[in-house]
Length: 66
Image 1 (cartoon, rainbow, N blue to C red):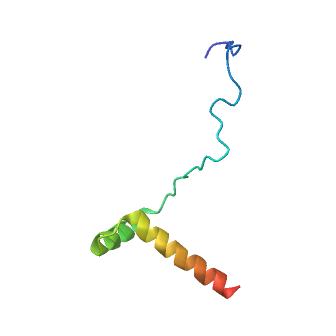
Image 2 (cartoon, helix red, strand yellow):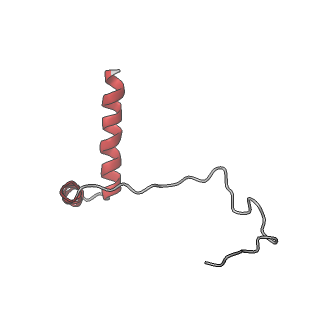
């Protein structure tokens, strides 16, 4: 790294987007991932679709208990 950087021509907030959404990675244990990959392939659906559906059902169950 340089000892000093010249930011005199920089623009504050040039790439700022208040509506930007970040998709954070979710790391599953290998055995859990293998299970869901196999189930998704058997059903002929995308892995992320199946996991999202399962999580939505879990959320509905949790909210229903409240």
